[in-house]
Each structure stands twice: as C-alpha cells, then as structure tokens.
Amino acid sequence: MNIHDRIQQLVDLSVSESLIEREDSVYTRNQVLALMGLEEFTPEGKNEDTDLTIPDVLEELINYAVDEGLIEDMLDEKEQFQAKVMDVFLPRPSDVNKEFYKRYEHDPVEATDYFYHLSKKSNYIQEKRVKKNINYTAQTEYGDLDITINLSKPEKDPKQIAKERTMKKTNAAYPKCLLCVENEGYAGRVGHPARSNHRLVRVNLTDQNWLLQYSPYVYYNEHSIVLSEEHVPMEINRETFDQVLEFTEKFPHYFIGSNADLPIVGGSILSHNHYQAGHYEFPMARAEEVSRFELGSFPGITGSVVKWPMSVLRLRSESRKELGQAAEKVLAHWREYSDPEVEIYAYTEDEPHNTITPIARRRGNEYELDLVLRNNRTNDDHPMGIFHPHKEVHHIKKENIGLIEVMGLAVLPARLKDELKEVEKYILGEPNAIADAHIPWADELKTTYAHVAKEDVEDMVREAVGKKFEQALKHAGVFKRDEQGQEAFKRFINTLQ
Image 1 (spheres, rainbow, N blue to C red):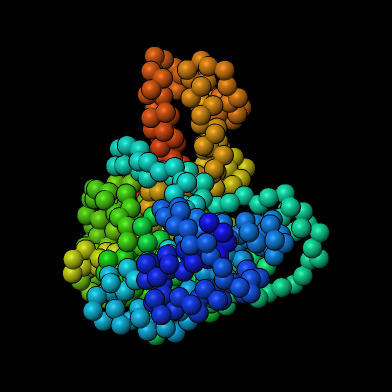
Image 2 (cartoon, one colour):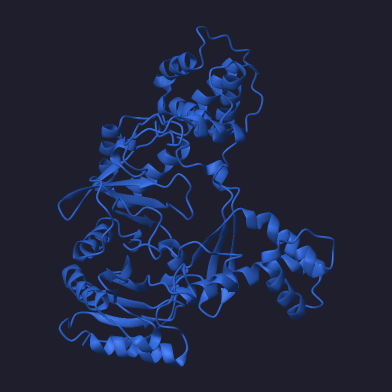
C-alpha cells in the first residue's frame, strides 16, 4: 500500500466517521495531496490494514512527510502537520455552530454527542494517546476514588528542546494563552500547540459570550472546557455561580465547575477565566451527606455537609436565582473568615487566602452546588501550602489539588508507571531500582503486606496509591476530619445563619 492508498484510506475513514460526505471525497483528497507535496494520484488499490483508525493513518502520513523532508522529525512540526491535514475534513466554525444548535433544538445531548464525536474523529481529542493512560479505582472510606496515571501527553524530543533553546526569545502574544478564542484554527509554532483542527461552540452565559470546547487530553467522559471570549483572569464571584448554574440549565446532563482563583489552590491557568465540564459523575458527587443546615435568609435552600476529605458545603434548590444568592453569601463570609484554632486566616496583611472551588450539577428539577472551601496560606513547615499535599505524599502527588482532584480524580505523573513497578519488586524482595523517595512508604507496605502473593502485589500497591491520594485530599481540607476540625466546621456553618 503506497502513500496514495493511505491518503484514500484517510478520506474513506473521514466519510465513514461522518466528518465529510461522499461528494467531498475528491476535493478533500486533492487538498491532502497538496499538503503532502504530491501532484498526482496513483494508488495501487490494495486494501490492507482495514482496521486502522484515523490516528493510525495520520502517523503513516507524518512518517512520509518526515522521510520526504516536508517537515522535521520533531514533535511540534509533526503536530502542526497532522492538524493541518485534519482541518481539510472539518466544517468552518460557523457551520459547526449551526449544526450544533440545530441538534440542540431537538436535544442538548444530541448536540454535545455531535460535537464530541467531531472533536474525537478530527484527532483534536487525542484518543489514541489517551488510551495509554492507566485508569483504576481505589476504595476508601469516602467511596471509590478515581486514579489516572497520565501517559497521554507526548514528551518533547531532544531535537525539539534544542530548537526551543536556540530560538530567539520573542514577545509573541498571539494567541495570548492556550485558552484564547484566537487558538481556533491557529497553525501553531514552536512552543505553542497546533490548533488548525480546533473548533469552538458559542454559548451565552449571563448575557456574555462564552465558548465550549473539549480538552485534547480528556481525563473523563466528554471532558470539556468552557472559556470566556475575553482574556480576563479567573475570579470567583456571584457571576461565577450564575454562569455555572445557567450552564446546567442549558446542558442538564453535564456538571460544570471552576478552579479556585488563587495560586496554590487554583489550576494551572489563572490568566484566562474558564470552567471545566463534562458528562461524568465524579466520586464527590456520589459522596454521602452527613448533616443538614439551613441558611436563614434563604428558605428555599437545602444545605448539607458532604462526607469528603475536603471541606464541602452542598446547596440545593429548584430556584437558580436563590441558589446563586446563597452561594454569594457563603463566599463573601468565607473570604473574611478566620479561625486561629485550626490555622485558618483570611489575610496576611492585605493578601487574601480564602476562596472557593464551586461545582454545579442538576438533580432532577433541582440545581445542586458544591462549595469547596479553600485556603492558600503557607508557613515554614509547609512552604508549598498548609492546605496542600504535604511532603509525605510528594513522592506520589505534589502538584496543586485543582478542580478535577477536588472531585476525586487523581491525575498522577507518568513517572509512576515505572516507579511503581520497582516498588512492587522491592516489596517482593526482587532485584529493583526503587526511587529513594518511595523507600519509606515501600517499607511500610512491606511490613503491612508481609506475605503478599506476586499476583496480588500490583493491586495492593494501587490501593496504597489511592490511600496516598486520599491523604493528599485531607491535607487540602481546611476543616480536618478529626473532632477538632469538625467542631471548627460547625462553628463556621453557625456563623452563616
């Protein structure tokens, strides 16, 4: 099968996946031929490798482009090339939006199904890479937690790193960040990802222009990003609550949440206001409610404390407006709240420390809003954050506890795939290359599971990783799960009345 056959295979796959119509075949084939530097089309007509997917065929085209000197054998150039190829098979953004809302009129689920399928089959969502991730659940007293060892993001090759170092530093500010609307259709450059095959759906929230996209590296089903059309920084306020609640009214099958708006307890991008959403039930959404409370001035609100390692208030109401007002009251009160007995201080001089990670979802006719209390203060013992994973869990998880982790999904670094195998060997007494950082933990496991069978050691280590993640979440909780912490939590709730 020659390169012409591969191009035809890509065209045929795009037809079968409903990216294009059969009548578009000749046109799209010619567009790809031009990108490949080919002026003729002479297929052999062989029908081998019929089980290949679009990403598989793209890899073949990329290899050809490298061999022919069309692109360099480096990550960014290969990413840019494949995005340009797939852009050939995609509608313009206006047509995507028309089709989305045509389907939305019938059923919001049908609309998001269409857009998710388009994002996957266009290879914007890196399905083949995402399948490399290691996913499992770990049992804890708070229910099953989701664990992901993230193997999907490709590592930069030495050639790419060298090129980035030798490039002159520029003040390139277009697009301003990875989330900006200007990424739609952007070809990419060294250090900025290719987005030729990127499409956005326009969504109106609180009479403002927002945009819906899917994450290229989805961590859960229909992992989406809802971003402001304006490049404005993250801020949790009344408008935040109104927007996430309105989103669940428009898309009742999706949850939506926001990272906090302060460093340490926030996400990796604080410069552009955005939310994360999706068609997925996280462990926290399934968590038990252990006590009820009332907000005196909001009789239509049902309040409860969630049994969770972090400190979560769950508010529920059939009134979207009243729920937004109640959440605003909780936020305003928490921003100013201090309790020295449990190390909570609202300010250090003029620097604020208290904020909230909010998550919204629908429960039948009711709106539900989880408010996770956060504090980003540091001290000498915990320079990375008092309410942040502490040093004893850093060998597993030392990154920020962002929205996804808050809800019970650990996104762990790729290094753990190999490192945990060495931990297993260490526990079994086999020759190993265990990392020093894991030895104290591995010694504990060795004592606890002294006679573990070889066929059981992987499951045992995975459960232990889950316990470490649970511990990291407890560290991030402002009101601890012990008696002192829960009494302090009650004091805070009582001040809301």
